[in-house]
Image 1 (cartoon, rainbow, N blue to C red):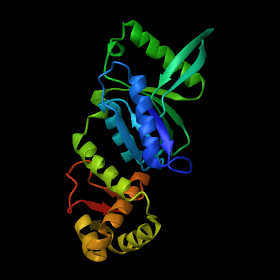
Image 2: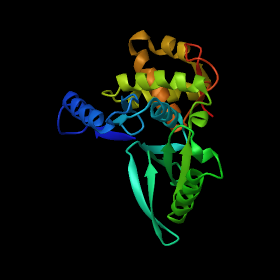
Image 3: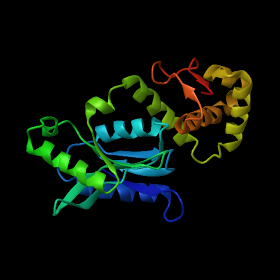
Image 4: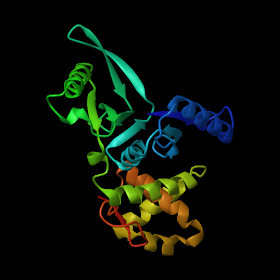
Length: 235
């Protein structure tokens, strides 16, 4: 579950941060899950996540080039199913590039994995009701979210890089980077640093990650540790 805060207008970031965290701690009650205050480069917003699993899902969603937008605001949707009102819990709302909407439930595996359980039946009802509403409803458990630890580790670093550059316009760096990639076909991060200089490398690297989010380029971040040898290329 999550709450959000955009950076436009209103109170200063530090004030919003303290207020949002205080509210999240109050809502947490006696739960022992971690709280994460995170910046989403994809939505250009700050969010509060209430477990380590939600944090890993957040990293995975931010890295997915098939996602156009993702909201990490928890919601309860009331849907009609076979004459009954269902309450469908949603932890993240994903808009895919093709315009389709996906409601995601993010939780550790439980009785839903036993097809004879009441939890599995309730999940099937939620899936069917959502489908009738024109939305795909999916359960995201730890085995799916944490399937590729290399990708998660790399994108934790990439998101931190993008967060550090959040007050800068990356547009000119993206233009220059695109020009070089069209000429060369493929570049490593080390080559990008040599081309553009150490002083501006952090912003060029952030531009790389922003374009990887959008699917403009592809890389080997899913199979090799992020380093100066990491390559990017036009697909």
